[in-house]
Length: 373
Picture 1 (tube, rainbow, N blue to C red):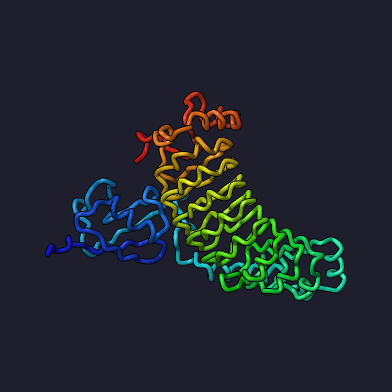
Picture 2 (cartoon, rainbow, N blue to C red; picture 1 turned 120 degrees about the vertical axis):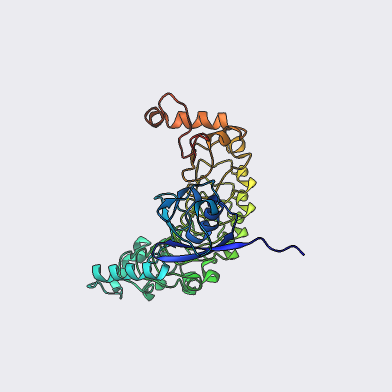
């Protein structure tokens, strides 16, 4: 029976805490950085490791840099090269950020009342628009549900609301539900009720405390815009592929590691933002999104693109790759690159003249391979 290779434990100091990392005794600095990526949300290329006053060389072995069992290493993260919801710090947890937001809301709106007046409720029924953002609310007022099918828009952004109850079914004509920047967790949304609001076109749940989205999301078949940025989502449900009319998907700053191939069934998608997640690859099904014009995937662990992205997504003109491992050499090898580059040039000619000059090099975040460290 073969014995396991020897390992060492390195204590990495980052953001006010110490992270113990078990690594092979023969590992290189690059291998240590890969292990640190899921623990810190910092891309390897954005990590600077220092031990005993020396910067650890990428290709060098840890032993050659005098890093052994019990060694203390300091990690310095380069700004803009994080993924997920940013570098994990002792002050970045959901509850702490939530408490800060609650404090600010209370300070700015201590004079506002939570009870909605009868006159206001009547006005809501006439206009069909309920605007209660920045109102120091801890719950959606009961008067809202009483407005019933007359409501088309409900905006309760920037409050401290913890739940969207089953009473949401009363708003049968609701087109837009805006709940950005509240304190809603997975248990706080009654998806059974929400899924019955069949006319919903815009759903914004960004800046809450969501970890998962249920399969019932796929029942909102008229949805055109879904905003779920700045949560703690680890994935998207397979049923997202049922959203045939979805045009805008904003899911940046989460912890998404893998996308379902069914996303390729969202044939109406025009804009997709998946920046600052934990993606290592995109499904080949992305090539099915023939209406796609904008794809923002910066600050992810990507080293390649779907092989049919440029060839099939013939409307694509905006591609943001900053903070990924994709180089210009990699892009040139993808079929359809020349056609995409020409479309991009036509749309951004003025910007290209300023940013690229006569070099003709793609500058949406892809590095030349000979310039990368």
